[in-house]
Image (cartoon, rainbow, N blue to C red):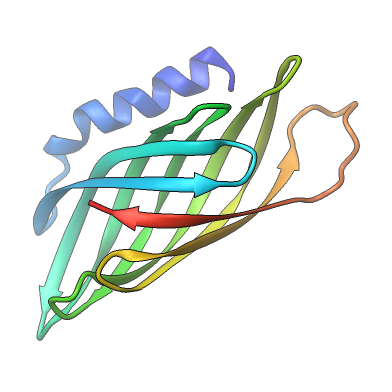
Length: 143
């Protein structure tokens, strides 16, 4: 991922406490699988909760073993059993011989006790790279 874009997203995470929304909560999670292998998600979400349902925007930084993600999205939650779903726009950087950069969308569903999965579709950002869609799926655990 380009350093300028990375630092801009990092600045959003640092200044996030100043965004005036309902309830601000930290977000933590672990992800296993896909080309990143394993990663730790750290971020912030702003929740509006009514009658057991919650929803709101979120920002997530996710360093991993073979790559990194930066995401901005929207979270939907239900009940007290850590059940939720999210949709995110994601920047992805993968390390093999060289860094490869992608942009795409993720959908994550954790139906019970913060355990579930995530699937995403990404396109390469380099214009010379083949515009083949990269699909990634992994297992998720919210903390």
